Image 1 (cartoon, rainbow, N blue to C red):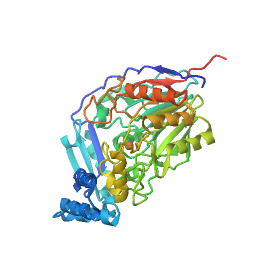
Image 2 (cartoon, protein in one colour):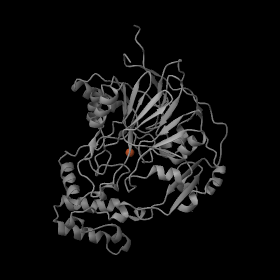
Image 3 (spheres, rainbow, N blue to C red):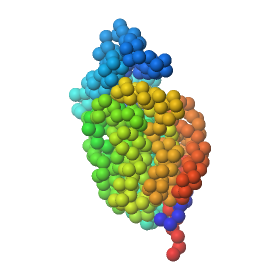
Image 4 (cartoon, rainbow, N blue to C red):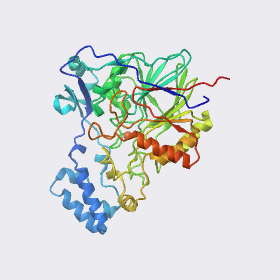
Length: 460
Ligand SMILES: [Fe+2]
């Protein structure tokens, strides 16, 4: 690739054929224990203790007072963690299993608005739950793949952290599809891709990246599903392979460093560092991790790195992981990444339970850093993304994973209410300034969900 490429505006979707009273379904494990833990209240007590410089004995007393009288909480939370130096979560909470799942149908929006069934784990595999899905008619437009010249590959932005890559031969792969999810209004706002996608890859188990209904839809059309390896499921990570298998799908596992050949494309699974309980402190149990993959796609026309929500943590840094990939397979043309900052475990959005796996001394030192404004983001953010672009030798940066305002619409600040949307134009401008500051020539290119990017070839 010789230059920064070109953006092609979103293709117009076809209108949905029919409406339906039941439009969504969700199937999720039931976590009876964690659902009863008041994580935010426990965090408040802990932070107040740190702010008031409470001795370990006094912080223990405050935590005991917060949970006393609740037998279940005393089984799940170790109030003497300040004295022992261990984590607040006992193992039974960190590695909680499940005996049953819940299947919900809903007209639209949250599952609470619909009907819910409790399904024993042992009954999932027989597939009888699928009889209920006959009522679901997803009212969703479809969109044709973007126009493509023969022999040219295309990268298309979809909902939130989802992108589709179409190779020179016309083979297609999709990453982190959640277009059947109510989350971020995806099912209302995002058209369904046309059938024929060869493979879907998932980066990690957070619900804005992993959606069973979407993957089930794709698998029913013949799409192969690839998920990261989860050595041990925990409060931080669902074992996606096990969940999908239980629901009757036949997913593949991509281990770190593995390469999948999908027609004339290769997809390399790159380690997922960052977005952990802390950027600086290891959890007391090493397996308590947000397990995942990033992916590098190589087509005949370009290579692209999809960074998801990554950054750095005590186990490793994306800079090193990308450096290894570059040494093995050469520089990357396009970096696709999120510019959000996430100051774990204190300034978080939806990950408010993660702090309980950290050793208390580490939680206290993180808090000190946070008060002094020195706690690093667990995700790459602006500066980390600029460093990655330089390491990858990227010509172009394309933003993603900032939410969803609407098909073909720029991402604005929280247009749909609480959620991970950010003002993408402002974040992109800040990244451009940082790239200039470090002398990196990567060009930040703005695009909207539905838009496509192609390289532009030099006449030689
Ligand atoms: Fe995430």
